[in-house]
Image (cartoon, rainbow, N blue to C red; front, side, top):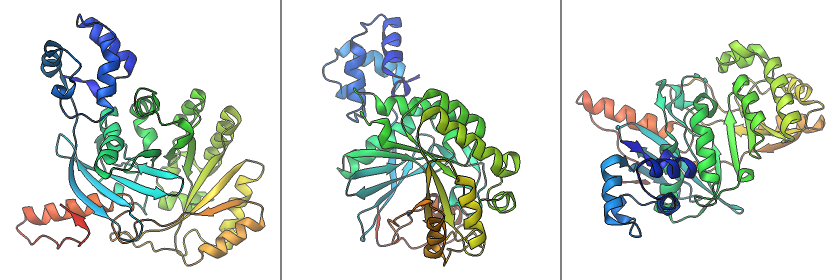
Length: 358
């Protein structure tokens, strides 16, 4: 069976012609897909015979809402989607004055092992398909009624560890016959897979690259981010410099503030030194507590920000959204997995939060 939603318009056109169908039908089908139809029978401007052929040869991915949490503070919505094979992923809808942003996952789990992230605790299960990534945007928009204007690839998984799928996803959501979301409204976050960053640079996409730096020195970064042991901060920053020189796009450096780990004045000075002469800005992230992690939120966010600014570094502090729900990456999936494990052992299920929506 063919995963029709993972096809570009050009691929769909070629596939239809190979099936003896006129190529112009591809645009009709593509438009229906991006209206969020869940069956081929809903494609009412297609002939019945073509709809039957599509049912026999293709499938449409349709995720189920396994859980949904709505913040009473700011309207943030956290979705736990159940995929066709029973695996679950997370998507977050965040509301800003400039529009609605959806944070999407690229993998089921993650293999990179960052010490402060709940997504990686059970390791990587598999990569998502382009369709499963598109569905997060489509069905979040349909379920919430909120039109999506921005996408951040900062959910579960390392986007550049699923490179080909993510590139196709970007093509699909950017297409004018699809969701038509401009590249400048898309941010892609990476732990720093340098070879893939170089590949991305050659594409010249006008998206925003966010590099999860989180420490300015190898000793600290290798402790909290195992990926650094194979790369090192110096090589990563050289790669970031090449990326800027190739694309002209300023990089955002993500920095989760961890108490007594990466929040000293000395580390602020080192970070400023790394960025000297290279356009970019630092986004300080107040750490979310992860139950299984000993790492705690820093008490020096304001002081660290001030120290960086004294060096002329542009700094923002990420606004915390959904603090009354499991809105940080991997938390809701991890909670659901824990409850399922307890149920299998015959233990009581943890009481659901009052904001959980069935």
